[in-house]
Length: 367
Image (cartoon, rainbow, N blue to C red; front, top):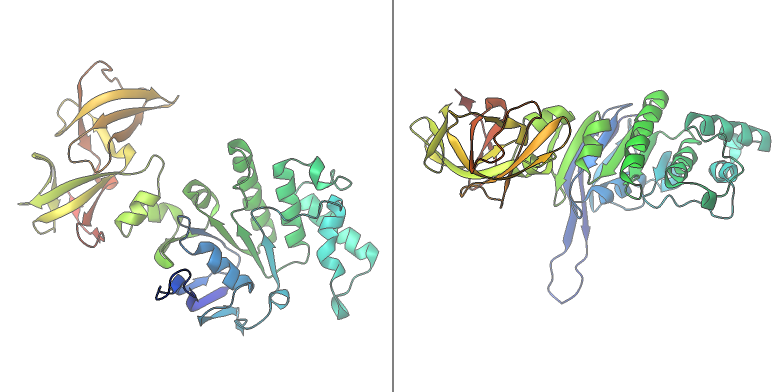
């Protein structure tokens, strides 16, 4: 089921002192979510991603714009008639019911030709429980389950009615790091097996990039970029997207282009083609640095962190916008840990230029 969001806007009335401006949580959001795909809505807290999810499921009504499920206009349709399954951050399980009873609960509210017998509901619930691999836990109460198991129950409850669209609102934020990894792999597996169009809201870019077919990066209610995760990482549309994606984050420098050369401070670090002389922001991914005695970029080396297969070199440079520069190199690289400085050459595919005023990406070719 494709989902079409057409010029979707949600504005909340002002709070506090008189004369305050209304708050626009979602601003002219237009996007077609492809049928059967898993889409990650990604952005910092307050960017409007959860509000967008609430608009899709009907918990919020848009100030303007339209929502279509396939060819059906569902903008004014109540949540219970939209055919959506919703999984919340806090799981929202009924503590007095068993796992089986929690999964069955949505089926008990079916009416008319969709109404099921007790035996049919039990069989359907057990089928979904097997899909999410909790069929051995059906007699337990939520308090007897781990966080990951509770999350699977919540997903099973959302899937049992075979929704047209599955919506996940920060479903992994209450889990520890290892369990988050395991559960996001399970969510991806379940989505692929069911083929249900899924929207996954998160502020964690690792989560979004690892399981999404496409990501939608948002800031202040406005879409910044849409695309496949690796494509967005490799070709950020602006400085915000470049800084938001990547762990460790991208290193940003004040620089300038002059006479076909890119300068950081007084050092000409690369040659450029097709860029007029101007001041720029230079974004360099942590993996874009090559330690070499002939490197043009000279940084003050502070310390190193050995991370198994990789080494992280922490250094500083007066043109960097952050207090430190973090570079990632292979652990097999021979590095002088006692040196006061480290020299770098740069990988062209890992360097991006952004306009100093608009912060929009500047197309360029490096030599």
